[in-house]
Image (cartoon, rainbow, N blue to C red; front, side):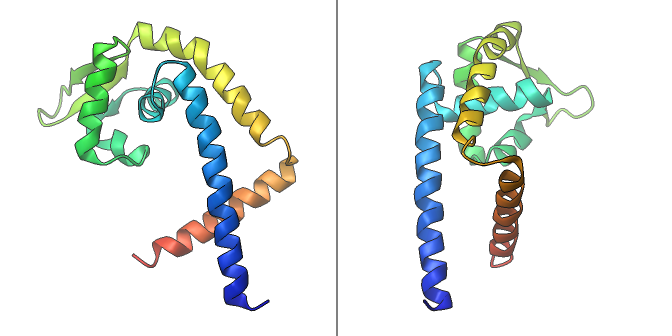
Length: 145
């Protein structure tokens, strides 16, 4: 098998695997009444604390044009609050509300368990190796931009 044939096969396996994992994760998030983007924003705020709205999209790989829509939906559900920055009027911070925290305290451990179950076919060393290899390919791919 040539190097290019191996690379194509590896890409196919990576994309199929990623799609399968994403499908399971998305279905799990939907069980909680949120789409994957809404859940990801709540997860970020729950685990990392208040975030400027401008950085949320970057951290969860969402276009800035879409983040306002997602924040609006979560705010209407009572899961988050907008807080103007005390030091910069151009910045709006987003914080998780008490309702959002209570929701995540219930949902996140179950979601985290599912993620663990997805990867329990790998031992710790294999997970570390997989992570390192995926980062290596990702960093290399980003150099093409």
